[in-house]
Image (cartoon, rainbow, N blue to C red):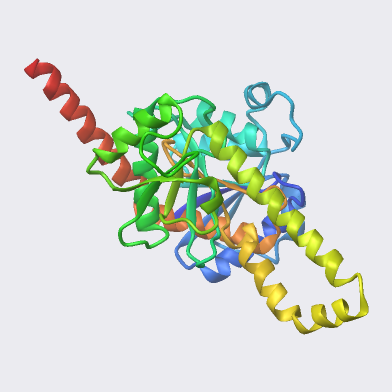
Length: 342
């Protein structure tokens, strides 16, 4: 069985939606066991009777969504629901963690309590985005590293390649570099170095440079840049989608004919909203840790949290992390052989 730790108290609607999502996951996924970390009395009041695939670990403290000093919070409150769930990975009590809690606290806690897999230099946050074609697109790094070395991005890109192949079931994922132009030689010196490194690797197929205007209809499966750039791309896309939705609603409700049109297009508008919803994806995986940690949306409802659990189970089931670890082991072996030869 796949053992998944649930931070039941993290999130805007915790623990109600987290418990509902956990129960939905147990109903739909047969090979998982869940351990819920949080206030035992609150959790039991929301569970529908006993379930032999659920365990509860009492954790009284909750790290708030607006935590100003996440590192201090993690270190001073190891008894919190988030810290307890994360610590269970190093103890080999669970195979993955899912949390809707504060992003920076989860990243800090993951670095302190879970730690990186051996040989992985920089972790990354990688949400999966919708696209015009309907196929998912991985975006990284969405904010974990504002500055990074090209060789570290190569590791992250390979991790995304394995994830896309094993979890998203894309037969031959293609990587694209976010840049200010599509031509080779565009961008900062850093971007040029990354381009050369990716162009000459045999780890994955490299498309080349991709402009931000193409992020919703990209010519590749994985879009990568440093954390500063990719985070701006992600937030600009989210803000534009929200703003366009508000403008469309205003236009459709500003006149009688517009209201009639909105009524007739109700089904199409609902399908559009469904396609753009982050609830369909589940969450963002933190790349490069010792074991999988999924950051679900802070505002996740039951269905979105269920999808984050489903995502975690798929990652474990398809051995994404062991496959990346084998690549890192081979890379270290090659480096040692080269040093001995020199």
